[in-house]
Image 1 (cartoon, helix red, strand yellow):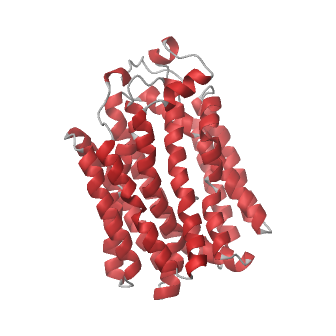
Image 2 (cartoon, rainbow, N blue to C red; image 1 turned 30 degrees about the vertical axis):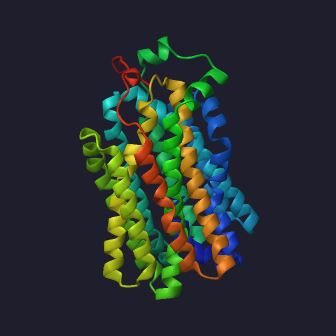
Image 3 (cartoon, rainbow, N blue to C red; image 1 turned 180 degrees about the horizontal axis):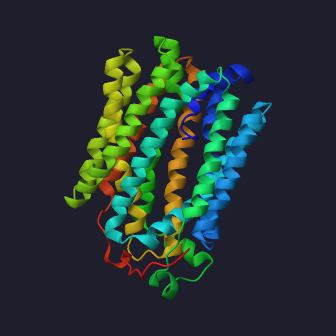
Length: 387
């Protein structure tokens, strides 16, 4: 929610701190720089820790980063706050992968990731819809809005501390590989992991570009209020989250994952282009819903690391973090390239038009990935234990 609602707050932030388009692009990408630089070494280091308490620690730090951003007197402090917030986000990724491996069989992971995508859609979509409402309610004060987000994070931290649990699996106890480079080599030697990451890059580039700059485009070119443009974006994100659960499950069940990714990529490109060429509100909602449907690819692609042949727990933590790093590469490049394209051409609409076509990476991934659960990726789960 915090990462993806910056576009709603950006006009107010820019007016307060007098930001150029390039600085706006830097701000939109800053939360992902640490992910790109530190995802693999952080996952290697933090995968040794308890997944429950790793999550608690990263949530506490993330909360502190939000309050730092809300206080920021100058652009540089705000930039550092966004950067540190992103680092806490990627540091938690190994815990997510390990907890998923602990609690679910391989055949269930697509459903788990589908449900995760549902929550992503509800929270991010809800954030896009509510952020302009909150912003208006506090008199356009983006700092107070970020503080409200900070209290939301504090509540999640407390909730997870109380209810989070771990589970012991035989695989972890009996066949954990040696540490050091063996873990990194075992994780990063899989061809399909790199193809999966490449697929994510293009899709997240266009997604982040639109989240950061689309509200500004609608406000400046079509006089569409931030509240309405936030609702337009939210409708697609929510539908994509909810719809991805069933669509991803049946794509796997019918073994059509590759063709599915290719078709969704085409829908994503067409809907993105349409959304910048019209100011007709009913049409924008329809195009946003189409774009949301295209995000049904997410549960399929994010499940790839869990099904790599012979992948082991700590290797999975690194592989999953690598995948999240690749999403951060795309998410970072999206607003950054859009901002500087806008400065170079003086035309935000043209910049977003160009960014609409980066999702072609999904077509390539759909054509080259080998899908399906590998026999060696299954594990036996012991009866539940405490955490």
